[in-house]
Structures are given as structure tokens and as C-alpha cells.
Image (cartoon, rainbow, N blue to C red; front, side):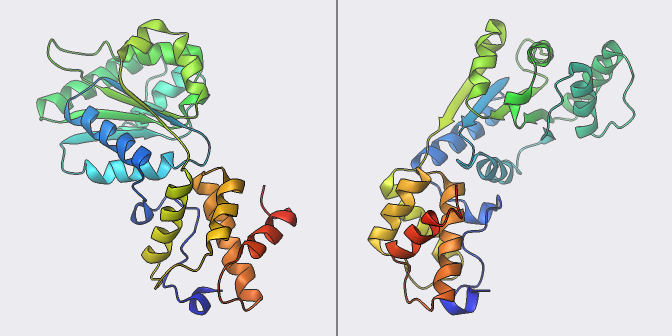
Length: 266
């Protein structure tokens, strides 16, 4: 579409969690550092939260790349079931066990056996639960019980929650689980300076030769997006598309304002 016109090799503002386009803002760098520390120190439970579109998924993908050198068996539950038994079956499946028992007791026995096998071959076991705010109170309690799988000097399973801010309200209702969360961090949106740096960074990563947004355009994008990367991406992508259609030489605040006024973005 507009790649050749603007001089890009890739689309700079695709809304996909591509680690190559990870912008290490201060909040994202801090969140990543805390998760890596939690793995290396074998912390039992960690929590990363943030509003929709703040970059949790991309950060999680970068985190996965950064820990490749660790001896880990990783299971990722992306769309957790609210039913605790179904959740546990999904956990088994994510660790390569497709033939799960029907009863919760037997499921837990199979999982415990898997954790011990990993330990015996020198592997840590990490379970990442995405969209954790969807979990039921019953499932949170089941997860707390999983954290009881431990030896005197280590947890047999590490559990990392990734979710929207509502996850805090759910975890607060389970005091024993809350006390087990050793590392927690809430991603905040970008400020204006970070928004500008983010827009410049994405253009450069896509093969651009400079900044194609005016200062006023960036300020308008920041105000409308509230500093959320997903909204920034959506608005910048449309701005390049509209600018291409208008044969513009640069993205002005007028182009951005027209897109907003048209109701194309929410």
C-alpha cells in the first residue's frame, strides 16, 4: 500500500506483538527486568498488569526470548477457562500432556509427577497465565494450591500472571495467594516524550530514514491515544494511509485530526 511512498521496508505500525518492534520505554524495561529476575531467582509467583493496549503481550514475547538460555519447561495458558478443572486440564496440555484424567485429584497427581520429572533433569517449570483477570475465584484458589508444590529450597512450579488491572481486585480477595506474589508490576501508558520516541523508533525499525510526523501531529496522537501503544499504532498507520492518498509530504496534525473527526478510530 504505502510502503514505497513513505520509504519503508515494513509496515511500521502494525498492531501485532512483534518483539523486533519492542520499544524499551522506562516502564516496559522495568517490567521486563522484574519478570526476568523472578525467573532467575525462582520466585513462585509474579504479576504483570496493565490497561488494554499498553503492550503487555509484546513485553511477554520479548520476555520469552530473553529467557531462552534458561533450562525451562514453559506452559502458556492464553485464554483461561473459568472452571478450575478445565483450567488444570489446559495446564497439563500446555506442558505436553494431552490425555488428562477426568478427576481433579488425578489431574493434580499427573501434574505433580511432571514437575518432579522436570526438577530431576534440572529444569524449572514456568506457567504463564495470560488474561488472568478472566480467572474465577475458584481457579485462583486452585493456583494457590499449586504453589504448595515446593521443596525446602525451591518452588516446583513458577506461575506468572499477565492481565488487566482488574486482576488485582480478584487477587486481593485471596489473601494467601496475594502474599505469594513475590514480584508485581503495573505498566503505565507512555508520556508525551515516550510517545514521540516510540513513533520515531517504529519508523526507524521499519527502514525509514527519519521522522515523518510533525510535532503537532505527535501531540495530537498522544492526546487521543492517551499514550497507549495499540492506539498509537492504529492512529499512525491510518495517518500514513491517508497521507499517501493525499500525496502528503509529511503527517501533519490536520491529517491526524481529520482521522479522529471522521470517527475512524475510537
